Image (tube, rainbow, N blue to C red; front, side, top):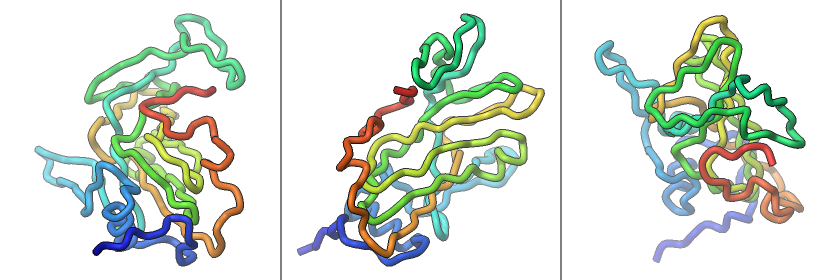
Length: 200
Protein backbone atom coordinates (compact mmCIF):
# COMPACT_ATOMS: atom_id res chain seq x y z
CA UNK A 1 0.00 0.00 0.00
CA UNK A 2 1.41 3.38 -1.03
CA UNK A 3 1.52 5.96 1.74
CA UNK A 4 0.56 9.49 0.72
CA UNK A 5 2.94 12.07 2.23
CA UNK A 6 1.48 14.55 4.69
CA UNK A 7 1.85 17.90 2.94
CA UNK A 8 1.47 19.74 6.26
CA UNK A 9 4.64 18.26 7.80
CA UNK A 10 7.89 20.22 7.56
CA UNK A 11 10.09 19.34 4.61
CA UNK A 12 13.83 19.28 5.14
CA UNK A 13 15.10 22.85 4.95
CA UNK A 14 16.83 24.04 1.80
CA UNK A 15 16.35 23.96 -1.98
CA UNK A 16 14.59 20.82 -3.17
CA UNK A 17 16.18 18.44 -5.67
CA UNK A 18 14.90 16.80 -8.84
CA UNK A 19 14.23 13.58 -6.87
CA UNK A 20 11.99 15.47 -4.41
CA UNK A 21 10.17 17.27 -7.23
CA UNK A 22 9.46 13.98 -9.04
CA UNK A 23 8.28 12.33 -5.83
CA UNK A 24 5.92 15.20 -4.91
CA UNK A 25 4.55 15.42 -8.45
CA UNK A 26 3.82 11.69 -8.43
CA UNK A 27 2.43 11.36 -4.90
CA UNK A 28 0.62 14.69 -4.35
CA UNK A 29 0.00 16.13 -7.86
CA UNK A 30 2.14 19.14 -6.92
CA UNK A 31 2.65 19.87 -10.65
CA UNK A 32 0.19 18.82 -13.33
CA UNK A 33 0.82 18.08 -16.15
CA UNK A 34 4.30 17.03 -15.08
CA UNK A 35 7.41 16.41 -17.22
CA UNK A 36 9.93 14.31 -15.22
CA UNK A 37 13.00 15.18 -17.31
CA UNK A 38 14.34 18.32 -18.99
CA UNK A 39 13.11 18.52 -22.59
CA UNK A 40 15.19 20.47 -25.10
CA UNK A 41 16.14 20.33 -28.78
CA UNK A 42 19.28 22.16 -29.77
CA UNK A 43 19.44 21.60 -33.48
CA UNK A 44 18.64 24.71 -35.50
CA UNK A 45 15.67 23.12 -37.28
CA UNK A 46 13.79 22.10 -34.12
CA UNK A 47 15.09 24.31 -31.35
CA UNK A 48 12.92 24.21 -28.21
CA UNK A 49 13.37 26.44 -25.17
CA UNK A 50 13.82 23.82 -22.45
CA UNK A 51 11.13 22.80 -19.97
CA UNK A 52 10.56 20.09 -17.37
CA UNK A 53 12.50 18.91 -14.31
CA UNK A 54 16.04 20.23 -13.88
CA UNK A 55 18.59 19.51 -11.15
CA UNK A 56 17.08 21.82 -8.52
CA UNK A 57 13.95 23.24 -10.10
CA UNK A 58 11.18 22.90 -12.64
CA UNK A 59 11.06 24.83 -15.92
CA UNK A 60 7.44 25.76 -16.65
CA UNK A 61 5.82 26.23 -20.06
CA UNK A 62 3.86 29.21 -21.27
CA UNK A 63 0.27 28.51 -22.37
CA UNK A 64 -1.11 29.99 -25.61
CA UNK A 65 -3.45 32.57 -24.03
CA UNK A 66 -2.01 36.07 -23.81
CA UNK A 67 -3.18 39.50 -22.72
CA UNK A 68 -1.09 42.24 -24.35
CA UNK A 69 -1.00 45.76 -22.94
CA UNK A 70 -2.43 48.45 -25.20
CA UNK A 71 -2.94 52.19 -24.85
CA UNK A 72 -5.48 52.50 -27.67
CA UNK A 73 -8.32 52.98 -25.16
CA UNK A 74 -6.38 55.54 -23.07
CA UNK A 75 -7.01 53.46 -19.94
CA UNK A 76 -5.07 54.13 -16.76
CA UNK A 77 -3.26 51.16 -15.20
CA UNK A 78 -4.53 51.20 -11.62
CA UNK A 79 -3.87 48.12 -9.44
CA UNK A 80 -6.79 49.12 -7.16
CA UNK A 81 -9.27 49.65 -10.00
CA UNK A 82 -8.02 47.65 -12.96
CA UNK A 83 -9.62 48.34 -16.35
CA UNK A 84 -9.81 45.31 -18.68
CA UNK A 85 -9.64 47.74 -21.61
CA UNK A 86 -5.91 47.97 -20.90
CA UNK A 87 -5.33 44.61 -22.60
CA UNK A 88 -6.01 42.88 -25.90
CA UNK A 89 -6.64 39.11 -25.67
CA UNK A 90 -4.71 36.87 -28.07
CA UNK A 91 -4.75 33.08 -28.45
CA UNK A 92 -1.72 32.00 -30.45
CA UNK A 93 1.41 29.83 -30.37
CA UNK A 94 3.43 33.05 -30.63
CA UNK A 95 2.93 36.37 -28.84
CA UNK A 96 4.52 39.58 -30.10
CA UNK A 97 5.01 42.14 -27.33
CA UNK A 98 5.37 45.74 -28.59
CA UNK A 99 8.52 47.72 -27.70
CA UNK A 100 8.64 48.95 -24.09
CA UNK A 101 5.40 47.16 -23.31
CA UNK A 102 4.27 44.07 -21.45
CA UNK A 103 1.95 41.08 -21.58
CA UNK A 104 0.37 38.53 -19.28
CA UNK A 105 0.09 34.79 -19.80
CA UNK A 106 -0.17 31.69 -17.63
CA UNK A 107 1.65 28.43 -17.15
CA UNK A 108 0.54 25.20 -18.78
CA UNK A 109 1.13 23.61 -15.38
CA UNK A 110 -1.23 23.75 -12.40
CA UNK A 111 0.58 23.90 -9.03
CA UNK A 112 -0.31 22.72 -5.52
CA UNK A 113 2.34 24.01 -3.12
CA UNK A 114 2.97 22.07 0.13
CA UNK A 115 2.44 23.90 3.42
CA UNK A 116 6.14 23.79 4.37
CA UNK A 117 7.46 25.04 1.00
CA UNK A 118 7.89 28.46 -0.61
CA UNK A 119 8.33 28.52 -4.40
CA UNK A 120 10.30 31.25 -6.17
CA UNK A 121 10.17 31.90 -9.92
CA UNK A 122 13.15 33.05 -11.99
CA UNK A 123 13.11 33.95 -15.68
CA UNK A 124 15.04 31.80 -18.15
CA UNK A 125 18.31 33.22 -19.43
CA UNK A 126 17.25 32.67 -23.07
CA UNK A 127 14.63 35.40 -22.67
CA UNK A 128 16.61 37.57 -20.22
CA UNK A 129 19.45 37.87 -22.75
CA UNK A 130 16.92 39.26 -25.23
CA UNK A 131 15.74 41.95 -22.81
CA UNK A 132 12.53 40.09 -21.91
CA UNK A 133 11.93 40.02 -18.16
CA UNK A 134 9.63 37.42 -16.58
CA UNK A 135 8.16 38.35 -13.21
CA UNK A 136 6.14 36.18 -10.84
CA UNK A 137 5.62 36.72 -7.12
CA UNK A 138 6.50 33.76 -4.86
CA UNK A 139 4.05 30.86 -4.73
CA UNK A 140 3.13 30.74 -1.07
CA UNK A 141 2.54 27.67 1.13
CA UNK A 142 -0.72 25.86 0.19
CA UNK A 143 -1.38 28.14 -2.78
CA UNK A 144 -2.69 26.37 -5.86
CA UNK A 145 -3.55 27.33 -9.41
CA UNK A 146 -2.11 28.24 -12.80
CA UNK A 147 0.69 30.77 -12.40
CA UNK A 148 0.03 34.13 -14.04
CA UNK A 149 3.21 35.24 -15.84
CA UNK A 150 4.17 38.86 -16.44
CA UNK A 151 6.48 39.65 -19.39
CA UNK A 152 8.17 43.01 -19.80
CA UNK A 153 9.78 43.85 -23.13
CA UNK A 154 12.51 46.28 -22.11
CA UNK A 155 13.80 46.74 -25.66
CA UNK A 156 12.93 49.23 -28.41
CA UNK A 157 12.00 46.32 -30.71
CA UNK A 158 9.03 43.92 -30.79
CA UNK A 159 9.71 40.76 -28.75
CA UNK A 160 8.47 37.21 -29.37
CA UNK A 161 7.22 34.74 -26.74
CA UNK A 162 6.73 31.05 -27.62
CA UNK A 163 3.77 29.14 -26.18
CA UNK A 164 4.29 25.49 -25.22
CA UNK A 165 7.97 26.02 -24.43
CA UNK A 166 10.02 26.90 -21.35
CA UNK A 167 9.56 30.40 -19.95
CA UNK A 168 10.73 30.37 -16.31
CA UNK A 169 12.11 28.13 -13.58
CA UNK A 170 10.42 27.33 -10.28
CA UNK A 171 12.68 26.79 -7.27
CA UNK A 172 11.16 24.96 -4.26
CA UNK A 173 12.52 26.01 -0.87
CA UNK A 174 11.76 23.85 2.16
CA UNK A 175 11.21 25.64 5.49
CA UNK A 176 12.69 24.47 8.79
CA UNK A 177 9.30 25.01 10.45
CA UNK A 178 5.71 24.84 9.20
CA UNK A 179 4.05 28.26 8.91
CA UNK A 180 1.25 29.20 11.32
CA UNK A 181 -0.95 30.60 8.54
CA UNK A 182 -0.83 29.43 4.93
CA UNK A 183 -2.22 31.10 1.81
CA UNK A 184 -5.17 28.72 1.90
CA UNK A 185 -5.82 29.45 5.60
CA UNK A 186 -6.24 33.16 4.92
CA UNK A 187 -8.36 32.55 1.78
CA UNK A 188 -5.98 34.44 -0.52
CA UNK A 189 -7.73 36.14 -3.44
CA UNK A 190 -5.69 34.30 -6.11
CA UNK A 191 -6.29 30.81 -4.69
CA UNK A 192 -7.17 28.21 -7.37
CA UNK A 193 -6.84 30.75 -10.18
CA UNK A 194 -7.43 29.40 -13.68
CA UNK A 195 -5.79 30.88 -16.78
CA UNK A 196 -4.63 34.50 -16.86
CA UNK A 197 -5.86 36.26 -13.71
CA UNK A 198 -5.97 40.06 -13.67
CA UNK A 199 -5.50 42.21 -10.52
CA UNK A 200 -8.47 41.99 -8.20
